Amino acid sequence: MDIKRVCVYCASSTIIAPVFVDHAIKLANILADNNIHLVFGGSRTGLMGILADQINERGGTTVGIMPEFMKEVEWHHENLTEMIWVDTMARRKEVMIEDVDAVITLPGGCGTMEEFMETLSLKRLGLFTKPMIILNSDNFYNPLIDLLEAMLRENFLGPKHRQMWEVVDKPEDIISAINNSTTWDSSAQDFALVD
Figure 1 (tube, helix red, strand yellow):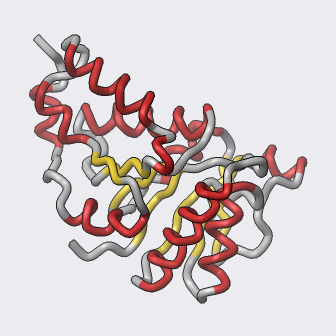
Figure 2 (figure 1 turned 90 degrees about the vertical axis):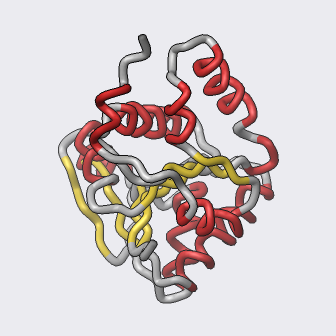
């Protein structure tokens, strides 16, 4: 698979464990080394800012997507290749996954979870068809993985839905996880309902 653009969901929090920072820097280097453009939430802080700063330092491409109201509180990164301003948080999520080759979810809070879950729901309906990779840094996402497995076990998701996401423990495995992900298309609508 020729990976040109990826969307990364991650934290804007600045009070985070060093392992999460380390993994963000490693992912940034991997993206820059492979000339893969970063599409993200556009914040200057937390893992978002770390990713963008490292990719910028390596001469890569960074594209931020942010609602206009966040400009007023100066959350936006001022040194991106491109900043796209939108009207709402809902529109931000739509634009973030347009024309990307994969979505990668790093550790984050409720915003990160909202983005991941909405995209997963779109994938279930065949409206988003690209690979979704969860970076389970330091077992951060074990509770999420347990929840997803419970959804499968209790028939809130069907057996085929297990193919919607991949889990990796380190950034070095992300590219191969994208390349080895199960092909997904709009026919997913045919088995979106579990019955």
